[in-house]
Length: 117
Image (tube, rainbow, N blue to C red; front, side):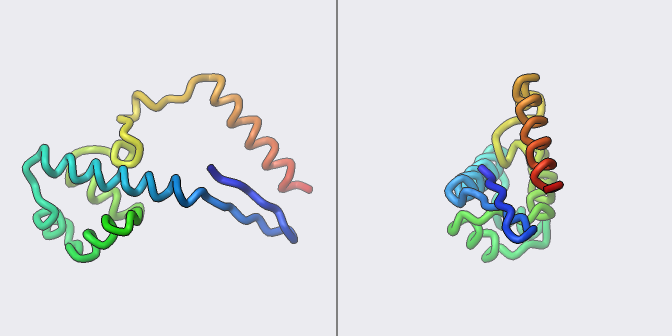
């Protein structure tokens, strides 16, 4: 959930930390599941991707999401998408229905209106 707050003509975006931590935990759980399925290890992945094993294990233990670049490299290594690692969807299953698209358009219009004020 993102909240936008306009104060002194500056927009601040707040995110729900609990949701972000949950997404990071799910990301790392899926990475570990795929490593196990593919009979690969964290050590081998880190060596292949030129990543620090200690850094990887720290991110996992504190439920910290990787950078977009690292997430992309991991997804490529595991022959999957970043989208799957983040939310478990494969791209086909996650297409919003037309009602959701309209709601998003309305929200965007409201934000644009606020920005113009």
